Image (cartoon, rainbow, N blue to C red; front, side):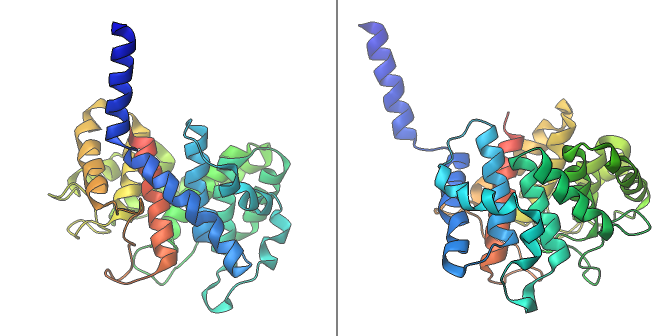
Length: 297
């Protein structure tokens, strides 16, 4: 009887507490991710790229994700040869970046032939210096433009996950670029750490020094914090698994938690700040969800 009472009490406490922030974020993305293709008859790098990528990681980490939330996305991602035939507004379509983002999502969803095919399709876009150059005119990347450092780090990750021997040379060229590239912004330093770990300790030091009094990070050393930049930094620092970084990570998590909307998503990070964009909102929410999932103890 005591055990039953204790069990019921524990269940009542858990029920009263409600879903965790991670669960709220997953539920929000599970609703939003499939809506874009249904309503717009095309697939997007924000919903079916960044948003879906967070759901694939959540599912792998044991969180329940409705099958319907990812069914259409998975079917689309597994056909890389059709990605360039995607309908969309050409004024806002960067097929190279979209391919990089779709491939990053696919890398979290499945292994095998489709991932290898997607990874192979990225090789022609690698620059002679080893990078994948996107949004070259911008000072710093955004949730939907990424920037060259983050695009290079994420493409390198896709090639690694694809695992074919033919990708080793491309990964080595990317490593050489990442080792030598200037990393003066918070976002670029985070991308380098995300890709190379502690091989550039000055980047780790910049991230620690760049944490604001609110606990988050902005795109530059003394910028106000933004959810997207904070999320990428949290992913980078969490990948190091250094015990001494735990207080820094916890303060970053606290910033994301207080910024989370009642819907479960996050306010969009835009460049310049303060803009409104559904695409930036979903991508920001996807990155923030990933950061909470991967930084949780």
